[in-house]
Image 1 (cartoon, rainbow, N blue to C red):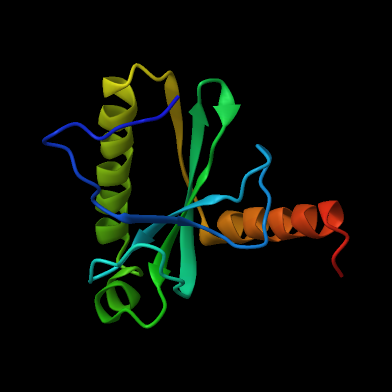
Image 2: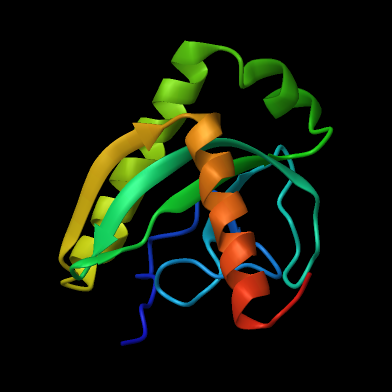
Length: 136
């Protein structure tokens, strides 16, 4: 099912995926990208993972890696501020609840996890890609 933004709804973050990775659902893991500047479509950008949002979408795991653009002055400086990061997590969670709710999607968000857990997901998804495509 194709999901569509409603007329007054807009993305509050940039969205992408990690090349040469495969998640549990057979697709590359989704990445929510926080940036001081709006990114253009089809751009390859170097990011730094900062956390992980645990999400179940229509009964299937659909975790989201949250990352900042490498060398982004604002986010590099403020990601260590726990209050700013917690507020951004709440904002992202609410955005997904509205976005998925409008489309009638069954959604469950099970909190946010550490950078370490995000890196573990990235590592296992790279291993899965390499295993499936016999890359060393």
